[in-house]
Amino acid sequence: MPPEGIDMNVTGVCVSQITDKLKMTQSTASQYLTILLRADLIKAARIGKYTYYKRNEDTFEKIADMMKSEI
Image (cartoon, rainbow, N blue to C red; front, top):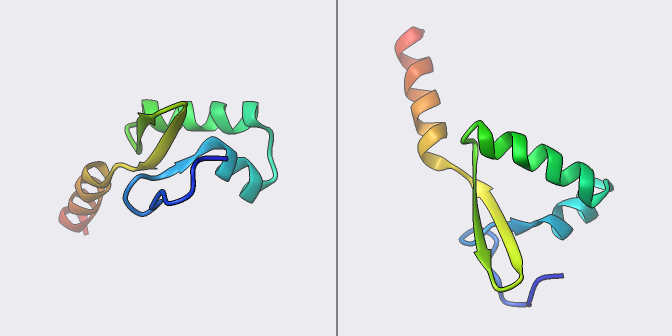
């Protein structure tokens, strides 16, 4: 588990937090995270021995703007 005091709203979540919450293996979670990274839907940041993942807000804003212009 990552160190205490990490604000997941700022830093994101690590793989172990995802696997614990979703009850999946680390390998499966990593495969899904790789897909999301390649699609630019999430960002990854390495802090110490942990990699933290969080939503790529820029991409979601672009998607929302595109949807607004199409509707």
